[in-house]
Length: 72
Image (cartoon, rainbow, N blue to C red):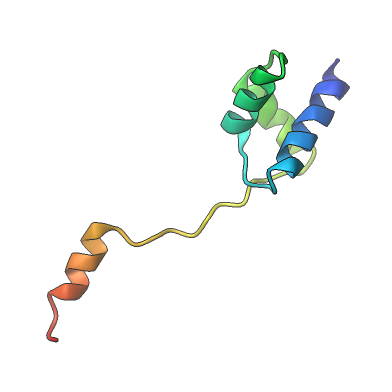
């Protein structure tokens, strides 16, 4: 069963263009009636060398206020 779960983890990961981490993959697999914890999925991702792409950090309101304090 573990090989089937590992295959499903890889399929979900690739279907969502490497954007899903262990929490989102777990939620997706739960909808597909697979029972696995987040740490198990994290382990399977690591064993397969899969790592989610993280989007770059965006500006926050504090960053904007700091830039507005300077001379115009």
